[in-house]
Each structure stands twice: as structure tokens, then as C-alpha cells.
Amino acid sequence: VPEHAELAWILGCLTNVPRLLRLPQWKTKRASQNSEGTVGLLTYPVLQAADILLYKSTRVPVGEDQVLHLELAQDIAQHFNKKYGEFFPVPKAILSEL
Image (cartoon, rainbow, N blue to C red; front, side, top):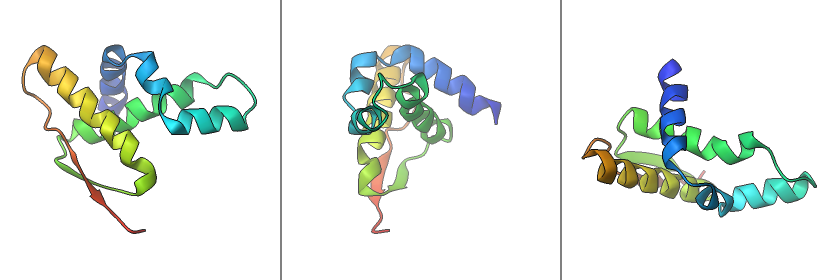
């Protein structure tokens, strides 16, 4: 679905790098790779946010390891709505036990 990539690009233009660098998944993967990390590691959470927001999801089933990524999607939705008017609902987590 091309709209996923298109929306990810738009949202990526609204998301600051320091916010992404604070995600623990980035820190863990970067440490395990013994490198500075890759752009893909940094931008993947924005793509996840686009996957959620594209369908205007209001509730998203997530495991505990994905809560911070959902919080990023919430932050991005709120930022977008503040800048451009109410468009995206702010999704809430449904914690799954699996």
C-alpha cells in the first residue's frame, strides 16, 4: 500500500531526531550492532506510526514492548493535529498478554 510509505515520509518530516533517539529499541539495537545504527532503525517507528494513523485507528493491540512505539504514534498524531487541525484520532493501547 503506497500510502503507508507516503504517510511515513510526511510524519517523518514532522518528527524530530532527538525524540527517536530516546526510544529504547534504538539504543538496544545500536549497541548490539556495535555501530552508530542505521536510518532504518531510526525511521521504523515512524513507519509503524503511519501504519496505525493511516487507518485512523482508535485502539491498537500491543505488547508491552511496543507501548513506547504507540506513544510515539500518539505524539505524532497530536503534533499533526495541532499543526494542521484535527485529523488523526489519538490511538490508545490495548495491552495483550501474548
